[in-house]
Image (cartoon, rainbow over the protein chains, first blue to last red):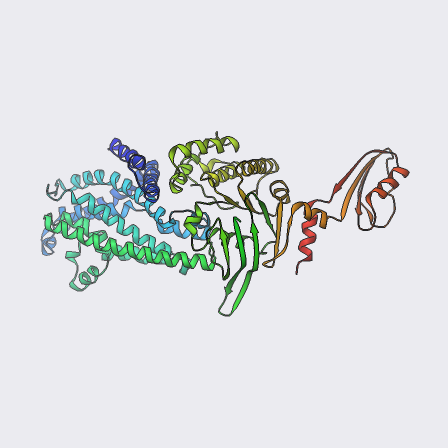
Length: 285
Length: 310
């Protein structure tokens, strides 16, 4: 496990040396590697996170264990499906840092002053670094999490035809949350602090993203509301592969993530342009 | 012309109707190789001007070209031509080793690996940071970090280096070291330096031209030597005498500014009394063992200039 991750990080770090990349892409790839290396150096914090993660999964698993099977069948779910589903949503949640706070702090401390006098966009470099962090955290969380869920359920609900979609949708879900966090961070230029926006968004992700219970078990109105937002693409999309292992479902979830990822990235580009304009006109740095 | 500023103005809105003019219709040019100090009291408009010239602040009106680019509309292209050091704001990654920060910057500035290695090695040697580059930034002292900041700013060989209070918080030794290195690098590479500082030592050691700004306007733009000769009206004469309690020579424009056993320090206003007359009088009435004649410190000149502002 650790050797694989180390090799991945090394490959990421040396990619820009071996592959002819444009200077901008080379810098972004380097920052992905930098974020990955930073995350890997924080092994103790990662272990503490995994411990918390295990306690949460274990607690919910024991709660579901005492729910009569007939009750779960009424919403077409089983104890095993719920444990696996929740494990996957939590992998995404636990893999993410708080990059909105980084942007907010950079704005408040004046660190943007130096970041803005560079030939590559501050927000692109921040996104790249956070993406590297997320990939390593996600990677190091996934295998032990799978082992934990397997220990709790004695089942491996993977289909060979869809297993490849699992890491892709996990990264996709994480990337969409990351994009939303960047949008939240950028809002600090207008609001002064992004923390209230983050608080509200985080709760919406938990509820409308289907963090604990799959959206299929939600009341009609709430489910429809949830599908009109990007939140299901963050958590429900990867985790629902544990409920419906059909290839068609996996492809649909991937397409859903693709659409939201493009929409969120577009929003980041537009909001970042407005952010820069505001910061540079008002002299906020 | 490497910097060409015309009628540059920046107004900040305060509330709905009120606005404050931070920089008011200023203009100046800087030619390659010049090292210019931008001085003025707090709130004079120095940093605002520097921010506009580095592209991180839009002006309200006026124009500027830095190395052929309009800073605020061509910020990213200009970034390749300039380096910045803001004394209180780091451009290094706090939790990384210095070398890792340099590596990231080399990628950001698209420096060829061979060029980067040679350049980083040269700068590390000149700034004496070779033994610091493998240490995390967070473990460096302020003086060490500032040398690394300057190295980071120079990695891509900028044509113009903007320095905003680069020695703030440094002790005397660290300041002297930093000034020496900066001057050496700027001279060797013909780098233009635009410096803002309250520290007259920085100005005297690094720059040969001074632009004084106050209330957003340029009050004075002169070579450092001209500034001294035009505004230094006082000379300081220190006498070491055989007499234990030396009596001061009298005369218009002469005042005692220091007295100790066997020592007398006089301030001579040269517009009222030639200094050689005061010296002759002293030699006539005292047994002088040693004597020094100095200009008043630049601090005093600048203090007077600030006082003359509108």
